[in-house]
Amino acid sequence: MKIVFFGTPEFAIPSLDILVKSNHDVAAVVTPPDKERGRGKKVTFTPVKKYAIENNIKVLQPDKLKDENFIRDIREIGGDLFVVVAYRILPEEIYTLPPKGAFNLHGSLLPKYRGAAPIQWAIINGDKETGLTTFFLDRKVDTGKTILQERISIDDTDDLGTLHDKMMIKGAELVLRTVEMIGQEKVVTTPQDDSLASPAPKITKEICLINWNKPAAQIHNLVRGLSPYPAAFFLHNNKTYKIFKTKIISANQLNNLQPENLHPGIIHQTKNEIFVGTSDGMIQILELQPEGRNRITAEEFLRGYRLN
Image 1 (cartoon, rainbow, N blue to C red):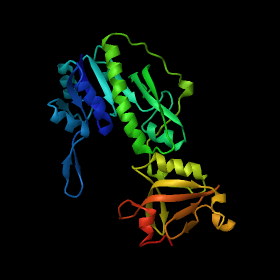
Image 2 (image 1 turned 135 degrees about the horizontal axis):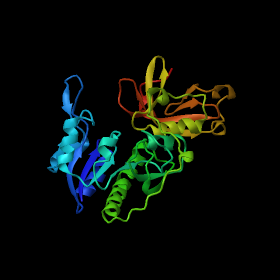
Image 3 (image 1 turned 45 degrees about the vertical axis):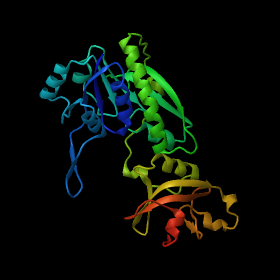
Image 4 (image 1 turned 90 degrees about the vertical axis):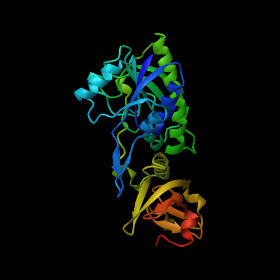
């Protein structure tokens, strides 16, 4: 089959790569326009474009997906199937073009966690399992009929980075299986049950701010779900401290501390350790990034600094 691939970040690369190395024809990739970044306004482009250039694949970078020139160009390519992995929402004018349809790889077991940040919210909410779904695009976001799903366990040691990487590789395998089923006309789809849907909204700065009045487990999961990017943070003496790794410490593990010192937000420091009180215990900060500095361990931080 002739495929047009829509994607942007590193997460999409294994899916694109596995299709390029298959017996299918990836005729073009569609990815966002180049951007100027930093003070020097250096022009950068997406990982998907970088891969396409290295593998001599045609690249389309529309500003607007409803642009007449883009629609004309993509019609001329004549793809049989559109594959979407971590890209923008496609308008109906686009996803209805290919005769075999357009499907998306989503980082949850739909209809759970519809939205922009399904991997993050699964960890933030303390789930022990998540998964991947391929589904045909429909008018409403993440609501189309599902094709394949695969369950993935969330280990206690997983954070956003490790779970992202596991799902990135598993997702590529699911994409290829889906393409093969569509090509062989063996697809059996399943309608989503909207009553079971839950949201996975975009991560905002307000979500990243740690509220020490919450239970330790919730704070720990927030840190895991946002590490390494954009990272949970707290403010102390008008400075921002990003937190990347924590450990839950119950009150009975710190018998040497007075009960009044276990209040939420109170900071306790030893020579090598940093603890912060929560509503039901304490969090130990293991890795952090003080404002204007690099990511370091708590022990490294305490060699020269203190959270006064």
